[in-house]
Length: 350
Image (cartoon, rainbow, N blue to C red; front, side, top):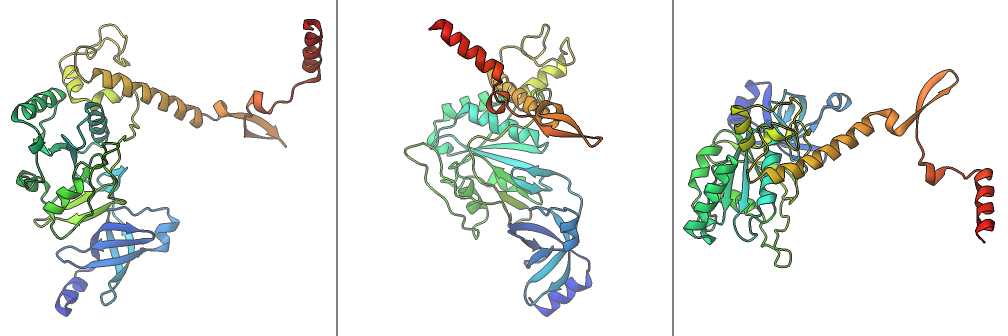
């Protein structure tokens, strides 16, 4: 680092930077208006407070060692947004990437990813890669179909490098790139940021799916400003929303609810009379299946959160405390009376 740049940074204390990578107990922090990265540890006080440091966090760095490129994180500033999977703080938008072919796009899988993206509350943009493998009519069919879902997809092709329309969308923002494995996320980032050189992989011929090439979350600096988060690919994202909230993550259902109201406030849009949502729209079957999952998840969560469901109240030494309930059939010993009755029944049958 040049002495002039070091003096300029030191004069602007406190040092505020952005965490761009997490490796075990070390954090790479990028300082503004500089290409300098500091490898930082977390102050013991933050650890005692249970303060987690995430990729995307704005942090204060103290005790900078410019020669060694080291420092310590003393403060984590409040987050504007927070994602748990992938763990990214302060993201502003999600760039959801799917391939139209190789692997072939699956409407159910796409719908699941879109719902997961909608639950974050971030802006969602849909980019469909490998558009050069489809005809103009097929692209038009997909455009009209997804428009009915409430989305305006952007067709791209990394092979032809015709993706300039993405770059303006990413400037000066933290963007999360998400999608299944093998759809071209790493290739897209390699094109947008040529010096990154992320590892890519061909689609598995046996499974027709991509192989995982990204193992952790990291933010990459875009040439025109902004940060891009590549996330590990996965094919079935979890949907962890409440059953009552699920319908709000379908844009086409939100449109119906904006012009009409269901008869019941707690309507789940299944069998209820005078429902404004239930009807002939393509993703309604997806909604019903996702709703079933949400109901099961909510039921399990209520059981674990209610101590009386899996625990029993016992009084010991004048104090009430909960103890785990044992499975009756597995742990309870058969009484002598039941044993005798069983033997007597066997003799009578014999």
